[in-house]
Structure formats: structure tokens, C-alpha cells
Length: 153
Image (cartoon, rainbow, N blue to C red; front, side, top):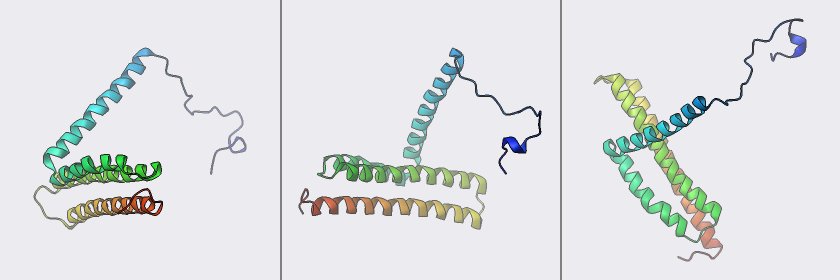
């Protein structure tokens, strides 16, 4: 039940934190440092995944071809966004799948466990569905361009 004025005890003092504006230069610089650090950690993660995951390398190569292709194809702007977004989604899901697989491998420590297999299979299914989504977005965007006469087979 939400707390409303009629649900509070008369004379009770609120213990809710009061929002404070961040005006301190040190707090702001720490915030920016976190953003910069997060950026570099992200780049490290992409590099590590590139180095250790063949599937990610294959999907990145596909992205290097498909993203420029989507930009230059005579497809509406929304179609381009869906095409590029679906390719990026594949990469995002693959990164998450790789992270899950590494964690499962670490936790399992050379022991076979049905839960470890299940977790890895679920991650693989997520990648598969993102690839199906990518294919569907590309087919629909290209079909619309063909139907509108902007693209000819």
C-alpha cells in the first residue's frame, strides 16, 4: 500500500532522503572519470571477446559488411535504423552470451552439470533468436524497398 498523508502518523518526521543538487566540482569530476573508465572497460571487453570468441569475430565481420550496406541501400530511414539496429543487437546478445559462458565455465570448474549446459543452451538460443530477428528485419526492409520501386532485383 502506498504511503499517503492519510496513512502517516500525525507529527511523524519523514526519513526519506532529500535530493541534493551536485554542485561540488570533485563529485562532477569523479562522475566523468567513471564515464571515461566505463568506456575503456567496454573497449577492453570488446577486444577480449574478439580475441577469445570465434562467433563474435564472425558476427563482427558480418556487421562490417551489413552496416555500410544498410546505409547505402535505397531503403527508408526507419528501415535503415531497423537493419542496423538488428545487426547491433546480434553483437550485444553475443557479448552477453560470451559473458554467461565464461562465468558458467568458471563456476563449473571442469565438472559437467545439467544447469551449466542449460545456461549455455539458453545463451545460444538468445543469439539464434537475435540472428532470426536480424534476418526478418532485413527481409522486411528490403521487401518494402522493392514494393516501393526504390530497389530492383
